[in-house]
Image 1: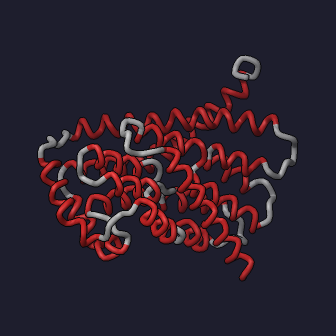
Image 2: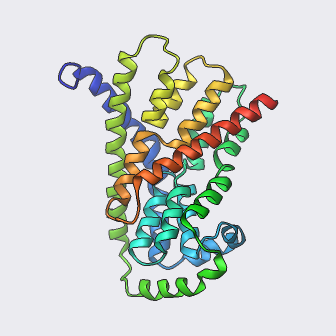
Length: 296
């Protein structure tokens, strides 16, 4: 396909790189640098303490709470990356790392407010979209906590203190090392966006004109392309909103490969488990959006 349709491949590659340069890079990289610096300089307790009652309800340790915060604020794939880093450094248990893999991968609020909200039709409420994206996390967390048998927060004190002792032996990186690590990750994200944008360009070109499932296929491949296609497809507000919510919470194949890239060095985490939990999240979020829309 690359040989026979070079112009189409070039257009897809440009679209992916422009998306990365104009949207992902300026919104994600500063948060990645800030998040990594907070961990390196020992400021995790100060950041997580104000929300400790909420994190206690989720049965998360102090470091686990920060991994969840990084996932929510920074978006894909910072939550799983932070959890994988903490696991390799002995700061969280294997059970908590698997639990976090199920609940810490999110579309960031900046992406939703800056990109998705601008494409919503007048019949779709942005607060309802936010509710449908984030509220199902409570049920997903309850299910994942039961599956991985994560203990209650009170039972963590001894294991957490042991993890702190282990982590004290790790030398904190310099800011230059933090910067290079973040640049490596953001470059991987850009590469995957380019690859899957090329695939999306071929799907768009070769699918029948007016094929109503095309926006959903594109959302399955790469969420930003799919969301943009849904906005211009002429779908009803119900189908458009459900598709946008589903694409955002699943993250597309591009998001799966991004998460796989940041956890592949850690054998304790499974990308297959991650995909299954994202499908659960997808089902819960789209079902909630449809129910709320029908109730209006």
